[in-house]
Structures are given as structure tokens and as C-alpha cells.
Amino acid sequence: MKKIYSSIKIIIIFLAIILIACSIVNSIYLFNPFTFKRDSITPRDWHDYRTPIEVVYYYGDTTKGWTELNKVKDKKEAIYIIKQLKKANEIKYSKKDYFIPIESRGREYKVVIRRPIGNSTYLNLMQFDFFDNGDIIELGNTIYIKLTKEIQELLLNRLSPKN
Image (cartoon, rainbow, N blue to C red; front, side):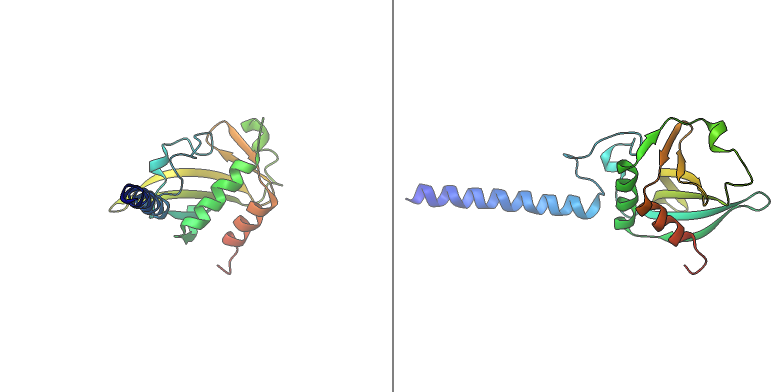
């Protein structure tokens, strides 16, 4: 009988250690190392995607360059954007198609998901460009993704003047 109780105690202690470790990993990292899938959206190692993290929204101007419009220091928002992009469809598109016609594409924006790694130094985890009159983003030089309605709404909300 004592063996059974000591075995149960060992199992409970072991499970408690596992739960505590999982809780720590979930509070520090955006992804779990066991379920993380490296792909064109998340090309880095799982441990690069950790807190603190920022989502920075920029507006592009041909004369002034990039202007920061909004900065959100929220792990949940970064995870949401990444998950929405993973759900979206990667499409075959050329750089030539993406930038034409110039008149109808609207304002150009950039979204950067980054992690501070020192004084004014950041590790860019993801960066993509898009236009307010379009539903396609450029992620890297050859990857184009059709945005979902949910991510379009979030991006345009974050880029509106009221924020």
C-alpha cells in the first residue's frame, strides 16, 4: 500500500513539474516547441518568437519615407496576425503584378513584428507590405498572401487616424 501511495506522489509531482514548465514556456514564447511549424510565415526557430514583442504599423510616403503610425506591445496581437496569415492562401503572384496599377493601389503600409534585443536594436520576426486598396500582402521578395477579412479589418483599424 505504501508503494502505491509513493508511486502516486511521484506521478503527481512529475505532472506538476510538467504543468509548471508548460506554463512558463507559454508565458515567455509565442509558440510551443512541440506544436510549432516552421514555414514561409514563421521561418525562424520557435525560440526566436518570444516576449517582449511589438507589432509596429508604418505608413509609406514617397517624399518622407516610412512613418510609424502605431505600435502595439501585445503578444496576443502578434499571435493573431501570424495565425491569420497562416490561415490565408499563399498565391502565385509576380512583383510586377503586385505594384500595378499605381493609381488604384492606394496608400502603402508596412507591418513589422519584432522583438527588442538591446538598446534600440530589434530582431525582425516578420515584415510585410500592403496597400489599403488591396487584399494581397508581400511577405519577403517572392511570397504573396491573400489577406483574410479578419486580418484586413485589424490592419486597417490599427492604421486609422483615431489610433
